[in-house]
Length: 110
Image (cartoon, helix red, strand yellow):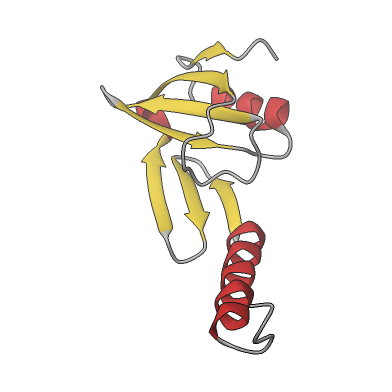
């Protein structure tokens, strides 16, 4: 890339950078009366029944997830499923979920 400044390497780096920015800008979570919708660019589009959520834990797990921060929440639902997300206002997000489903166990310590 140093020897040939305008070439394939530069284009690949630029496309990678633009993809990462796109994912960060278009990752969001929506809560309505019965669903938690998780959207991360065009890669992830998941809906979870709020009534199926059993537990929420705080985590710093760096595993690939629809989360734009390492300060994350792991949401457990159904029997063995979980998803890691990173809402901006964690306390308000958890309070809203627990208002809709009081059976959720809050193990975040927030």
